[in-house]
Amino acid sequence: MPSVALHCQQRVFARVREQLWQEQAEDGARLYVLDFAGPAPRVKIGRARSTDHLIRRIQGHLREKNKHGYGLIDACVTPPSADAERAEKQALQWMSHAYQLVPRTHEEFLDAHFVIAEACADMGVFRYNPQEDDD
Image (cartoon, rainbow, N blue to C red; front, side, top):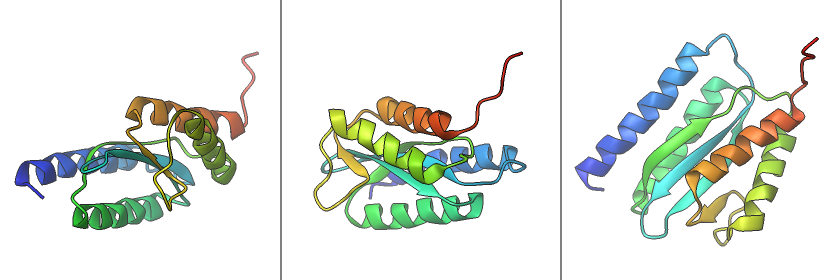
């Protein structure tokens, strides 16, 4: 991978780690969205059971994608989710209405817009998290 792409990827990953460090009191299952540039640009929505697991998952995705010429250009993580599995399924379902799944995957979408994937992940978490009354 070109050094400029690796530098961009490192900045994005550092931003995610910083966000998680600032929110360390709120550990728990979360969704994440990764935006990859490369031969066939794609967005991935995934789920991790804890902050440590999330970091390891993202690192694993980066190693695998970098081997195939993809670089991370943006990423986000949701707040902790009361039911991350259902939130992820909902986010993936919403994305599948607008974008084509990458063949042989269940979580990656070709030429998808990162902002749309981020909104789907956030809405999925919001839908399955208990809501506080405004009274």
